[in-house]
Amino acid sequence: MLPVMIVVMIVLMGLSVPVAVAIGLAGVAGTVGFSNLPLIVVPQQAFIALDKFPLAAIPFFIVAGNIMAAGGISSRLVDLVESIVGDVRGGLPLTCILVCMIFAAVSGSSVATTYAIGAILIPAMVRQNYPTGFAASLQATSAELGVIIPPSIPMILYGVSASAPVGDLFIAGLGPGLLIAVALDIFVIVWSRLYHQPVQSEEPAKEFMPSLRRASLALAMPVIILGGIYGGVFTPTEAAVVAVFYALIVSLLVYREMSLRDLATVLRRSTLSSAIIMFIISMAGLFSFVITRAGIPAMISEWIVTTFATGLTFLLAVNMLLFLIGMFVETSASIVVIAPILAPVAMRYGIDPVHFGMIMIVNLAMGMITPPFGVNLFAASDVGKVSLHRMVPYLVPLVCVVVLCLALITYVPMISLGSLYLLGIR
Image 1 (tube, one colour):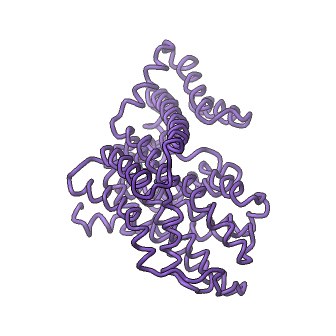
Image 2 (spheres, helix red, strand yellow):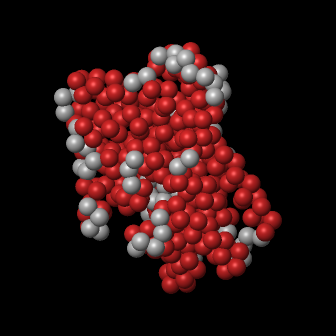
Image 3 (cartoon, one colour):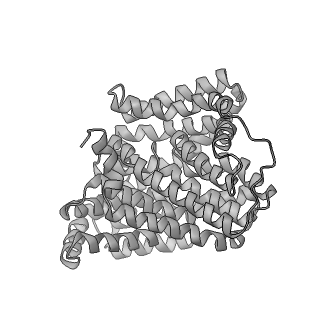
């Protein structure tokens, strides 16, 4: 049954059918063709997949991120980081990475980060004679931090799918996010020296304290969210609602760079993004129900345990599988379908579910920057007005940097779990 459902899904996606529809039709095929269940099961399971309180955080985080992106946060963060980096060789690429890291803790979305930061920094890098392909590739790769550094929508999806605490996942994402940011910084410094990029800035250096004051309200948002969760003030879902109100107050009343007309546009865009993700979750829920009822996850679990003798070989195989899946399937859909199958198997090897979640999220996040369906690539290509084939030569070494970081995250669990121990959560 599973091979037929997978073939149906792959054929439909090959015909350019939307991912959610392809997954849903594969689930319907499994329901009707193999399980002999009535069609009423399809809407029932689609609803049950969405009837989970933590999922309410997703639309709220999307709204908060879009409000902050439209409300003048991007330019303030860029000014702050430029005042820190100063006139150093590779200063603008370093600024791109660091701003994406900070903005990731505001938006929780890699695509939002690409558009919000790329619109400012890709043209700035091009004006300083950085190749357009390099600027767009670096922006797309740096924006990947949007789903690794908390808050993160894929972390919420993994937490719901694998029954892992979302709050712990948020804290665990700090280590991998910082590791990837530092690795990209080192790469940029070396690359800039090898290719003799200019030191000078086209504008006078900005002063640190004024820039810090202008960006202080933006920097306070992740502190409020994570501090509130672990201070026992609110749950991750409630934190998303707090983030929306905070973003509204800052953007409308303090910065005043967003009008009510802009807010309507933001809400419309957020509604569409939320609907797409929720549709994927509902269809993936139907797919998971069908294969679970057929006992397929248990069969896969037994096969994996008998095939791979140790957790190390299991993780190697999983990383190779996830890398391939991430290239062709959207991250949210991959997590919702695969996490319920692989997370229990990982636990049988003694792998912490939070650590395994970081492995899945970082690996599948690379799918956002790898052809043929890398959403960050298309977003950066659109912002930078550059074709994908001009980006690929610069993208390959950046992907290699992230792969090396993934290897460390996979086989050094304390990179993910260390922050939990430091805070006394474990």
